[in-house]
Length: 75
Image (cartoon, rainbow, N blue to C red):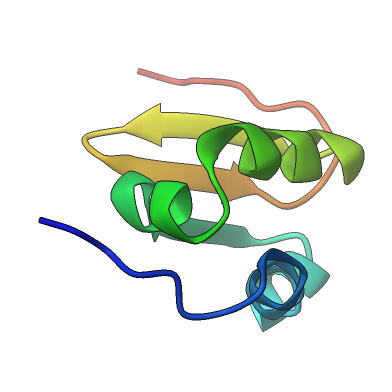
């Protein structure tokens, strides 16, 4: 399946990180394939790190914890 980029990388990043969850310390989730098609894995990782957030990957999804505090896995 070929995915066609729909926005400039900067616009896409602004859109994702302007979500209410990202602004209030919540969690956002995006499909890995979609992120790779839109801006690339490396650019996404760089942007999450620049913001001081935590990035997880599970079952084809990126999960971004939108705060710089500690994260503890319970189980």
